[in-house]
Structure formats: C-alpha cells, structure tokens
Length: 154
Figure 1 (cartoon, rainbow, N blue to C red):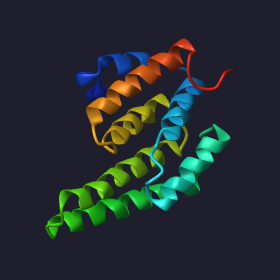
Figure 2 (cartoon, rainbow, N blue to C red):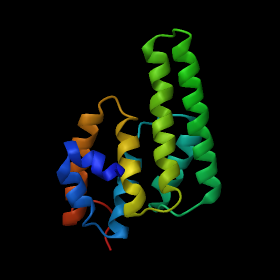
Figure 3 (tube, rainbow, N blue to C red):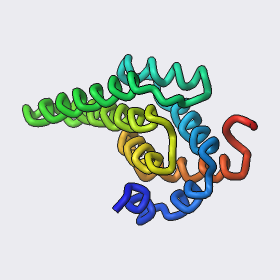
Figure 4 (cartoon, rainbow, N blue to C red):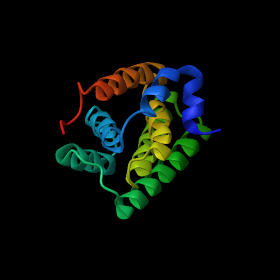
C-alpha cells in the first residue's frame, strides 16, 4: 500500500486532487507548505526551509537529501532514547515531530514527484500537533493550487 493510499482512507479528496497536479504544481505545494513551517525547528531544518522559501523552488540536491535523512535518523534516535528514560511527553514529542519534518524534507530534496509527495504529506502531518488539522489545511491548499489561487504564477 502506498502512502497516498493510506492518506486516501481518511482524506480521499487530497489524493484525488494531488493526482491531478502537474509536477510544477506539486513543487508549488511543497514550497507553500515549507513557507508555513514554524521557525522554532532544528537549525539545519531552518537553513533548508529558508533556502527553499527564498528560492521558491525545490531543486534535487543529494547533499541536502543526505543531511536531512541523517538528521531525521538522529532525531528519531534521540526521541526514542528520551522517551525510554521516562522524560515528559513534551520533551520527546518535539524530537519526534522534528524527525518527521526532516524526513519529509529529505524526500522532496530528491526532487518533487507524485511518487514521493505522499510521503512528504504524511510525514509533515505527523510533524504537527494535529495531523488531522494539518491534512485538512493541506486539502485546502491543494485545492487552491489546483485552481490556480495559490503558489507561484506561471
């Protein structure tokens, strides 16, 4: 089962709309999503978010892909270790969320495509306080991009 199929179980409209987007519109979706990220995330994530927000493009970059994937793995290890020693949920959940965002960004740093947009959306949703609310917001953003009312103009 693909990640888009998993998302479609609770939000079929997102998947239906995403599948209609061109690669340029998928990139616009990623850029608009990145621009909305909180600035209180890991410094490496902030650097990548700033670069993508400034350029307005998501260019394949194997160096960033490796850095972000490594960061995701480190944050996952930290969150597991912190959780196992009994730290408060607020402490380890922040690491968990940052790991999800790092993984999502590592996926699209390979280039944006229909094949990896599902992983991006799913991981980003779990990098937020309410995945359900995030997916609802994502559904609205996808509809706006599909209709030409959000994202960069061609």
